[in-house]
Structure formats: C-alpha cells, structure tokens
Image 1 (cartoon, helix red, strand yellow):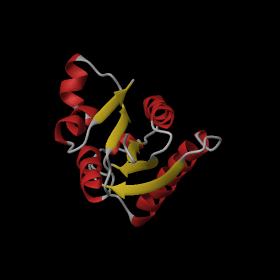
Image 2 (cartoon, one colour):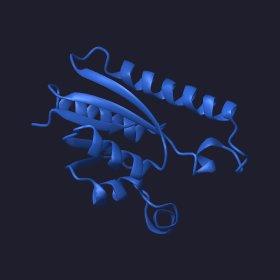
Image 3 (cartoon, one colour):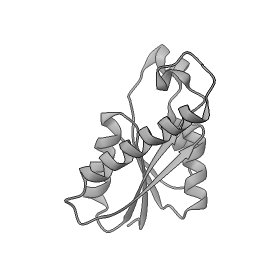
Image 4 (cartoon, helix red, strand yellow):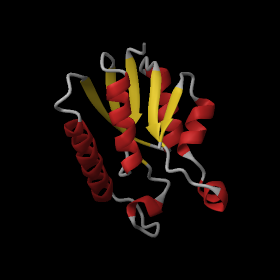
Length: 141
C-alpha cells in the first residue's frame, strides 16, 4: 500500500472525485493535495495574455490556496493525514517533478475525458503525467 499519495487539485469536479477515491482507497497514507498555478495557460485564468504582474500572481496564489483549503475541508471528517502544496509551473511537468523530489508512492488524479480534436489541441495533463511518472498513476473520471 502506498504511504504517500499525491492528488493534484484544480477547479474541476474530477479532481474532487480523485480526492474522494484516494481517501477511500488509501486511508492510511499521507495525502498531499497539489495545486499548480499554470502561468503558461492564460485561458485558465480568463485573461487574454496580459502580463502577469506581482499582484496578479498574488491573486492566483490566493485562489490556489482557497482551492486547496476547500479540498482539505472536503475530507476533514475523515481520519486521514493531508498536506497541501502550491507550485507555479506547467502542470504535468510540475506534478512529475514533485513526485521525484518528495517520496511520493502513487498519484491519483482526475481526467476531464476530452476526446478527438480537443484532446489533440489541448493535450491531456493526466495522459502526460501517466507517461512520465516514475510511480503508478490512477486516473479518476
């Protein structure tokens, strides 16, 4: 059984489902909730590519912290150890780097389930993490 499980958290219901799955499947593990601020994807933040000022980065950090706090409260009634981490970078790369440097045994993450052209054009963080991860990955829809 894994001792340290990483659950990437974003605004999606899929990431919440992944957290629920991780808590149910690995109740004795430490679960780290990771939110990656993706400054390379302007559309994620509803902007057209305006320059990222320090104030804007601070707003993104506050939003990320709020997402992590909400996710942690989702499992507050469970007897599980959770930690939170907030990073800036490209999601797939940041997730796999985090795993390599923090003794993570397993990743549980949500997938948006894109198909066809949208998957080709937008890519899939879950798919990239699965291919590059040095540890097992469970994808939850």
